[in-house]
Length: 114
Length: 112
Image (cartoon, rainbow over the protein chains, first blue to last red):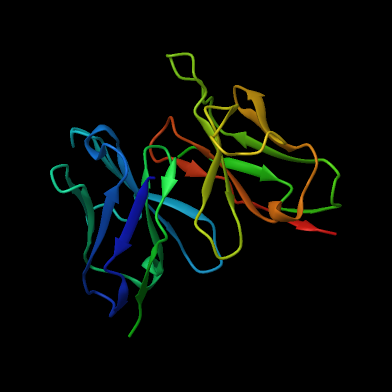
């Protein structure tokens, strides 16, 4: 059974940083691209960042480019999202997703507020 | 960015009746490999999204066959042949051929 477990969310002040983690199990992690997708409260879905299986391709949404960094360690079946210079508009539930959204974690809430 | 436009945004349906959601993209979603990279997701209240359909018309394992995806080029449809109570939620189309991958605004399906 595929499992994706996010952690690392919480309350942070504007301008602060957080590092989200996603631990994967139940599939060959190194064979799949991975992404972070977010959902602001009461809003729709926004694809935030993508990393290919071998890390050769990395993409970011314009809204986070230069502030967020996606990374992965295939030996540890882990995915991360380093978020710096956080803004109120980054407040959302952040999901990690496998491939083109074939599987999703339960999400972790990030709240940016003073 | 590719804009995905869904309609309607709200869809009240009667149990056992069919339902249809339209999705249009601002660019073609047909890849040179011949596939159309259009996915459909369901998000039930309080849950994570779940992919129902991938590459236009392929149903995920475990998805009831009352769900079907169709369309071509830039015009797509998700159909539910007979709506059941468990189908309540928000449905999103999503394109995965042009970065950034983008979603439609979502269609809220509710029971009349």
